[in-house]
Amino acid sequence: MSLLKINELRVAYGQIEALKGVSLVVEPGEVVAILGANGAGKTTLMRAISGLLPKSSGQIIFEDRDITNLSADRIVRCGIAQSPEGRRVFGTLTVAENLKLGGFTRPPQESRASIEAAYTMFPRLAERREQFAGTLSGGEQQMLAIGRALVAKPKLLLLDEPSLGLAPIIIQSIFRSLRGIADTGVTILIVEQNARAALKLADRGYVLEVGRIMLEGDSTTILHSPEVRAAYLGG
Amino acid sequence: MGTFIQQLINGLTVGGIFALIALGYTMVYGVMRLINFAHGDLCILGAFIGLTTLTSAAGGGHPGAGLLLLAFVVSVIVIAVAGVALERIAYRPLRKADRLAAVVSALGASMMIENGIMLVWGPQVHVFPSNLLPATTWHLAGATISFVQVMIILASLVLMIALYLFVNHTRFGTAIRAAAIDQDAARLMGINVNRVIASVFIIGPALGAIGGLFIGIYYREAYFTMGWTYGLYAFIAAILGGIGNIPGAMLGGVLLGLFNAFAAGYVSSSWQDAITFGLLIVILLVRPTGLLGERVAEKV
Image (cartoon, rainbow over all chains, first blue to last red; front, side, top):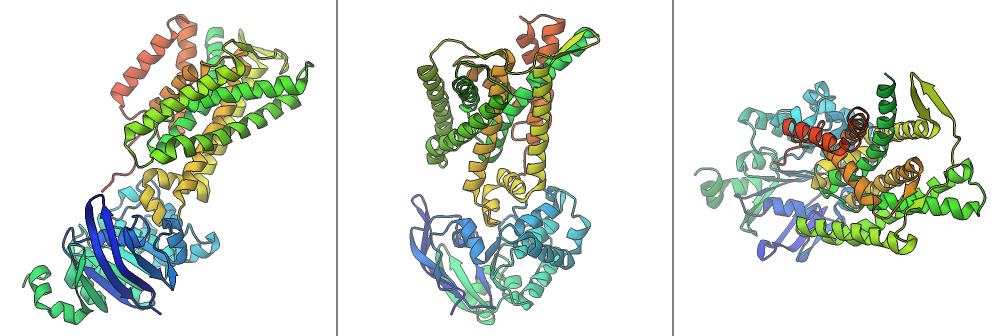
């Protein structure tokens, strides 16, 4: 049984079709990367899975359950959490409040342990727990967004561009943390423009181009495919 | 000294009422970026429902303290239900529409409630019974403080503290604040944003109904256009404190009440609005976002 199965998904913004029939699968325990340039439809796909966008057609099946038209809060309750593009931390709430909200769907006593685990994984957050999230650096906000998603104890973690706008050294440390998260058995679907970092983390990947999957395969295959080398890795 | 204390008490009384009503404007704005222009009318509808409860339950006799409590309970429940219905009927269908459509809908809802009150209760001024509360007064350095004033000041204070604690120290309160900052991010936390919106349309009108009934009891009158007058004051109080900011609405309400009372006491009551709104303009020139308002999280 696949954890997530997407069939022929179409999403449109008015007249403009952003996803033109995307199909993919994510198996339990896998890390799957979705690569693509700006405007390829990566963020649209993530928002559609999380229930933030209406779908024109197609299906999203999670653990054998059709979640295509469930509301966003129900989808979180099914076990899908997202660290969204641009991090979207609650700037005028404290770090601790942001993490607590990550556990909104769980009993408070249970999420407390996950919050402590997030502090252990990202000690910078522990130092700043009473600070407003808006005062954190970009890297720290990304840690908070990932930690916040983990507090939901998801079966599937969606990561939308965790490297966006961050310095290379910070990106390295974020991806080290993601490796650690993957090693604990959390299934991850990651969307990235930084193809090299994403493929190093992922078991498999898909390449998305203007709303269609153009290429799929295991990470090494994609990394060595001439199209990907030319388009995303600088030859 | 007598004038000062007298106007301080008068100002705190009216300010407490302004603050209770202003909270409804600010909470709805915070979550939906919408000015609920029907809010003032809902509050005064609360005063009418309270008055009708009092007079019909007293059946010609003297309404006592127990009946007064009943009037508050009935009024709060009816107005909270009306608030939720208002959101469902007038605002939810327009949530994805142009901003201007929602504003027009809000103005329309305001007129409908106002005229609805006139149709049911008539256009005349209704007088509240004079013997609702003990006529006890206290004298302090030349100022006279009535029982009603003490009750309004204390009740407003208690309600505001309770709301503050609820919003800042409970899970659902944090969810309300999160939805006010970023609705999509709140959805990704598993928060049902529709439920958050419904909750602000319960809490705001419930507090507003209490404020409206306080107006009726304090001034001992209610008439159908009153919602517009007091709604405007409370709306301005919310702007003064920084719209969208809950402690701001409390501070703005109390300050507006105090400005108004001191202007009336030291200058003249015919100048009180001119002075109050003159001060308001000066404050907004210096701090355009209001006293406690700073724009919530930047969207990336």
